[in-house]
Length: 276
Image 1 (cartoon, rainbow, N blue to C red):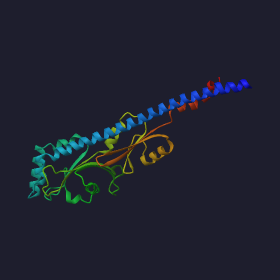
Image 2 (image 1 turned 30 degrees about the vertical axis):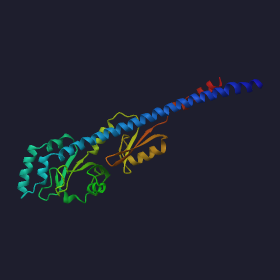
Image 3 (image 1 turned 180 degrees about the vertical axis):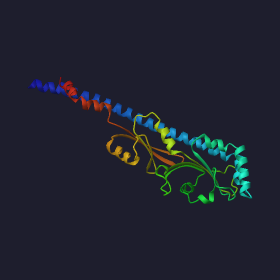
């Protein structure tokens, strides 16, 4: 009996403590590696998203600095015929049409000029001041911003309700008393397809203004899927980003740790090794 006590105190207990410390070190290492992977994937998604927007930023700024474009949108036309004639010449001599075709994003210029005709990428701003995007942009009080919002207007299909656009005041040539704005509507469906093509190991959700704008999980209801992941997954990373006046939250998840799965499946082997 004394030998058993000595064996337990001097062999079994130290062995269990040593193995426990080693196991804890392995688990901590895997936790750190998994967290590092989640953060890397979140940063990769955010970098891709911002690069896509920055391309539109360059287009908007190039349009703003173009004197031919400025003259076209500020000129007072005497008739619809004069405007159409000027528009035709403008399309021939400018790069605006080619810029519009470089991406599937939609470029629209709004001018407080009542003599221009609505259509073909140009709109009278006075008819759009009650639009949700315009109100949100004016509330920010900035010269340029990224807008991401959910539009619940009745005339929109469900797939069209998620809006993402870059908006910029056209004021490079100073304040001439005529408000001019360019909007570049980002094709959300195309952007989502491009994001899904990124090689990732983890389920991910990008949240903006309390609604999920993207997920790589393939679920139809992103919000419901996110709530399920938040309830069922212990291993997650939540990162906050602020980019061009928009606050993003990115959630990245892991399943159970690989080491813990191995232990759960082979627990009896571990018990044998500890005892013998």
